[in-house]
Amino acid sequence: MCGIVGFIGFDNLKELAINANNEQKHRGPDSQDFWCDEHISLAHQRLSIIDLNERANQPLHKENFVIIYNGELYNYKILKEYLKITYDSKFSTESDTEVVLEYYINEKEKCLEKFEGMFSFAIYNKTTKETFIARDCFGIKPLFYSIIGENICFASELKSLTDVEGFDKNINKRALVASLNYLWIPGNESIFMGTHKLPPAHYMIISDYKKISIKKYWNLADSINNNLNEDEAVEGLQNVIEESIARHMISDVPVSTFLSGGIDSSLISIIASKHIEKLSTYTITTNQKDKKVEQMPDDQKYARLLANRHKFDYNEIEISPDVVKILPEIVKTLDEPIGDPAAINTYLICKKAREKGVKVLLSGMGADEIFFGYQRHKALLYAKRYNQLPQLLKFIIKKAVNLLPVKIFGKGIILTRWAKRFLNFASLPIDEAYMRSYSYYNKGELKELLKDVDNIDIDYIFKHHKVTFNEKFKDDIVNQVCNTDIQMFMNGLNLTYTDRASMAASVEVRVPFIDKKVVEYAMSIPAKYKFNKNQTKYILKKAAEKHLDKDIIYRKKASFGAPIRSWISNELKPMVDDLLSKERMNKRGIFNYEFVAKLIERDRLGKEDNAYQIYQLLTIELWMQAYVD
Image 1 (cartoon, one colour):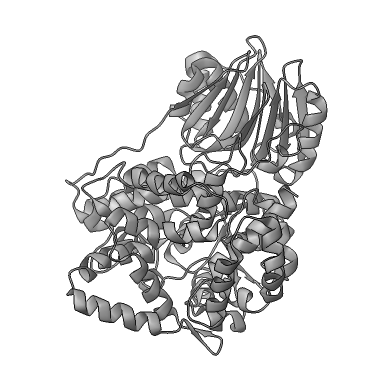
Image 2 (image 1 turned 30 degrees about the horizontal axis):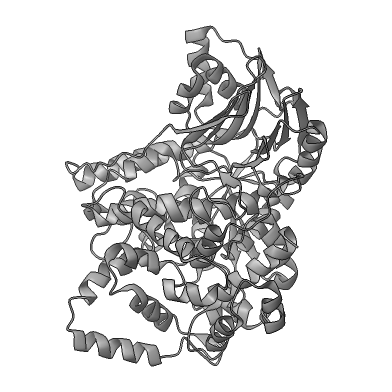
């Protein structure tokens, strides 16, 4: 795992490359180097995972080509043998980087069809001055690019580009609206005008005269295998998951795992432990005060249980940071305003693991998205039943729930939180309902909140979600929802904060469920095997019975989130009063203070659960201070 940066056409190419290496050093503390000619400079930061020898440092040269590469190619040994047999290729390293470059030299963009892994890389042809840039199928590894005048720059992290002379720091209003609505920014939008993200499963070619062309190289198939019976589906799923985890264990340094005690991380940990002598696992816990407010299931109980049963090297980390101190650091780390405090969890657990010498952690991320595992998924199906109730009964239910508090004497009431959220979307059309199930405002509220945003920008994010939702699996609501999460939530939030937060601690996080073969198989499974007998992730749970005891598989689900409600009510309360004060907000000129004040007041009175909205408003203000002021 590494970081990459490139500059095309600038006058001070060498200086820019050196500065970029310093800015992204956390992504590659083992080596930083650069190469440039009169047209381009390429900078690379290396976290050594495969072939630890200096010979595999980058930029890596071969014939008339040079590559900078961020990622892991899990099938590189198989591809290497193919290249030797087919093209009589010779190799000077044992790295996957050289395999990527050699494959591209021989088959150009067709190489992407064969790559299994996570990556973003750039290959420069010294003769033609053409630059080829590609990103993996799901956007596990990031790639920002910006056009500055007649020149082009790209990087793993946005912060490596923002200080380049001429960089446009005007705020992209569409992205700002999205970050408020979702807490993150979807698609290829960036918070800055003139800067974009190369979309997942796309490659970009930049010609010698700096013309850009972007093409998609892979599509998730829109087909369900309705001929599968349950036993066949279970066996097939067991095989692809076990094979994926085996591939993800390829490394020249030890591999450890996140262990939450839930089915996803537990399954990965058990299978991973079969490939090494002693597996180290890392578990996040929270203190009793925060648990009282959040009222979420106890993860650590099950993580300890699993670790004791299977003799893991179990490491438990209590998340009790000085959140007032760490929040500005996390905001800058994440590049863009992301209002999910789970990033703090990821950073702290990766930091602790790194202190113990860990460079690679496996995560269970992605399973909820592809197997229909979130509470909001189930709630969407329940909404259909709710809408069959008589109008009078629905009116009474809504009135009663609206009167209920979400918190009494500092203790959270989780059932009320969920009921209020459910009623926010239950009566909407199915595509709008799903968007509302994981967003935080309706159109009217966004217009009230924002001072200077065009209705077009607000309308766009709702249209974008509608198009995404209706893109595939139109006759299968379960897989339609899963596909929407893959395109939106998984890419825009989970993979984004995981990359930035883990790499800030110089740790590589691998995601075996977000594997092309696993996702393709999962998305061919009929809805009846994903949600069955009132069980979300039904088919995954059945497949897991081969490896896990039922008390782990069928336990109550918990989220990975930080105790944000407790923080907003306690440690962060003075920061809320300061950064979201009338004076500050009027000076910033983005939000209407009266609307924000009402959010805060109703949250503190326990009438509404507005912790995430308040946290995101804090995040945006801190982000403005770090990147704009």
